[in-house]
Length: 334
Image 1 (cartoon, one colour):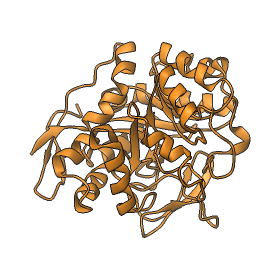
Image 2 (cartoon, rainbow, N blue to C red):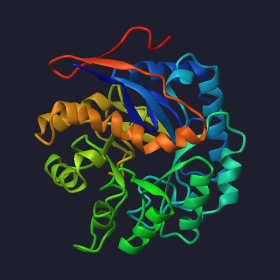
Image 3 (cartoon, rainbow, N blue to C red):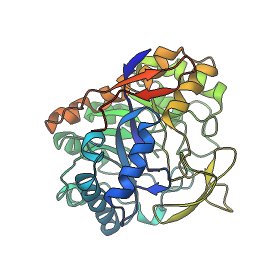
């Protein structure tokens, strides 16, 4: 079976490389991107998470320089995903994001972060219940970004206003939430019920149990489901200690990635082709639909943002074995 290449909209690092490292260089980026290609990924949005503005700016600038100087970056990286800093800082919603660095939504801060970049920020994740966030959604859309709801306590009315302002995605739905929520009126239900939102899911069986994921995807619908990895440097790498946005994280034998001693999940070690296989093996969808959720659907999420920046994704073809192992068509990495 041949399909379009996979697209990962949320990847913080890979194969021992942290995309949030302010010292990242072209060689390190090429190492990570080549490993991603082996999992069938031909396009990705390296993701930078919450930090003080000066640090965020340095991380984005370093990543931008590495892409420009690398061999695979110009082919595989059309832009970036900025997850934060305009999130909900409350315990349970912030996740592994540094609560003290979470900032009020402010177009001036966002302009400062994106102003000097060659590659644009194509996707912004924010919490729309923060004061000024709905207005910032409109500003971000006018400046060529797709906008996602994430790390958010927003209920139905706020989610609806966010969608009306231009939000089109839920970031890793089911995660970035406290363990205990009201049974019905909660951010998870509010976003599931919003038909105009795509929803991204981390299908590793750790962030969301497989049977729960089946329910969530049935509620959202495969046509609105996007598979992401939320991968860190621990992906496609042996178990051990790695760096992630200034944190020490530990990739465990069971595939989880946590802050040592805390139990706090900190991204994943998931590869996107494994997410495709998981959906099939768990009986949630068939192979073609699972691949669609990791290729066509994420392309739909960023289509308008790409068009706003006059960016076209390079065509790529993946060949899948009967066991759903991908191989890249020759010439795509040239």
